[in-house]
Length: 330
Length: 202
Image (tube, rainbow over all chains, first blue to last red; front, side, top):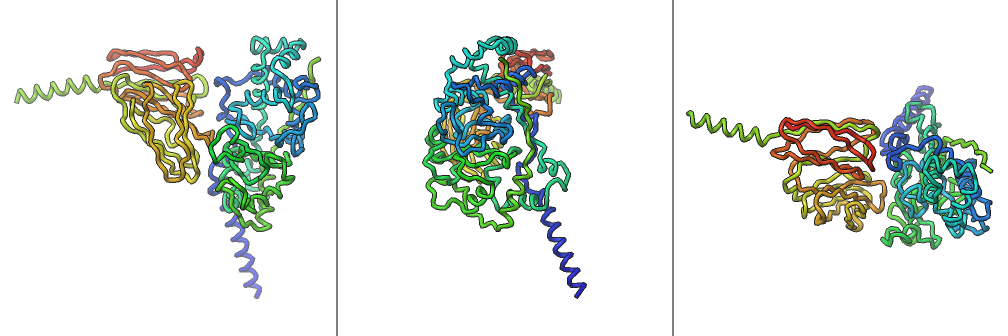
């Protein structure tokens, strides 16, 4: 009897080891982002001075009409570069139409905003400034406000030759490219530290690349295909379709990267899901019956354990980026 | 016997003249860009070319086709793709529409010769490749990687003496060489030095 019990324990141990051993296989393109793969505008890395200017602009409320909001209001470093709200709030108090996305590892991205309407980080950085609902400025207002400050006059002249709206975008984008998260438990696990991730997170990784079908969209070093999918959140928002009338883009939104995702709740383009558990359950259900839903979204039949493991794996993608808030020039 | 020897010698001489080889090196001063193509001026270029897609990437960084040649796009991926071009530098625009797994579609490269056109996928914006529309029968594709700064050039140049290096967004470089001549030129991007190209025609 004792021998049988011992054999059973051994068999269970061997099985669990098999599961863990499988964890590093077939990860597809998942990996740790490579700084060398960042493509800078004109292949020129920014100077320290440009980065500091961009950082100060990012936190300066002068860039909003009522001087009550900066980029960091909706993309707050302490809230996972998001704002903790389902939908953001504009400088004039208007409720915005979509959830504020996080800013982690956008240096590797090629399209921006939930609908991908900006083709560069420079273009994206300027969008909210002149949005009628968000910061409610005009390019002229922005330049005028900055010209009143000696620090900005000096820095823009030194770095770019002049203050211009376009150069404001360059500086903010340069800073945003430094928001890099690449040393999570998952990255340490990939680097060979097999105890960096919990057994639950390792099982979650297997579900992530396998039964969970997550890598159909959340692939690559930043866990995004930079593509647009209708994932079955039915809220009458056409998403990408507004800019490209191809039928597959009806209700489709950009796949967000998942690094530090546990820090930027709530989730989805409308902020309608409050927790990662709800997100996993949404995909588990498969959005059956939702019009125009992507064929990639199908019921998953995940067990309670598998769902918990998936969340544990996403938590293992956490590597916070600490940003010291700068003094804003008078 | 003497006739045969002379004929053989003559053929060897002809072969020797036509079998010029271009060698050299392209060395970047910073991180290299995505891809380049070096080609000899003259010729027709390939009449047909093929580009496939799998795992959300194109199987070639650049596909070479002569003017009015035909390009076949394939989709071997499990994902849908939609290849398009809207390149302001070459002026080329097209959209082949949605392609499911296993589907192929063809387009005619009926635009200006000696152009480099960026193509992508509307569904997967990170996918990129280029169509080099060149009238040349001797070319070398240079698929750069970020970690490697120097690349060897070795091209069976035939009787060509003028060569062009094209890199997307960079200023094109044209070099004319006499047999035995060695030349070094600067490769510029918006007027800034990005690489040095040394070529020898043997």
